Length: 179
Image 1 (spheres, rainbow, N blue to C red):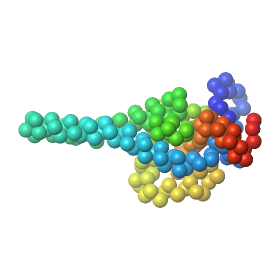
Image 2 (image 1 turned 30 degrees about the vertical axis):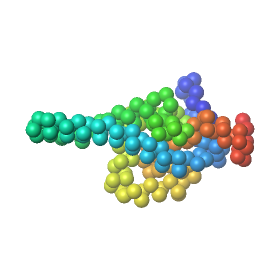
Image 3 (image 1 turned 180 degrees about the vertical axis):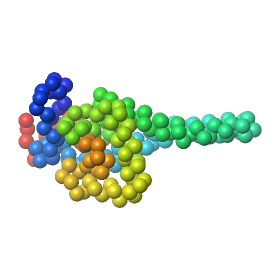
Image 4 (image 1 turned 45 degrees about the horizontal axis):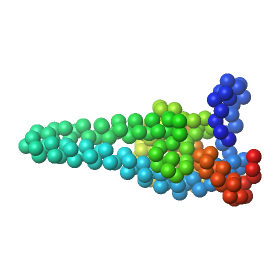
């Protein structure tokens, strides 16, 4: 079920992504989502670590005065993460770099691609929910048929296999009907 921009003008809303109608879109998403998250954490960490090293070197060279810039590291890290998630999830691939590597994409519950603000808010709600409710909140995915996490449910999003992987699963004859 591909997103069709012409469909937006249609008064009938697009049917929601359903694991019973499109099982190939949901096959194996959870383990690959974990790997995609780890890839994204590495991508987010590299510039932050580089900035911390530069501030450290600058602090030593300036005999301690450069360490005054260390307070910028926290806010800059948050801005970097929001820009990363907003631009990648709100971009044409509807996926972070880690999600692209793992052939995943994010959609709204109705099947439309997300936009910049939804991508950024998705990251904020994830980190707040995991921080406030402990990582045990991630177990929510085992109790719903779409395998959505709490922040997905709250924001009306779903992470699915991209079209390429779904077609591959159909072609492999994994019990999915051809369309």
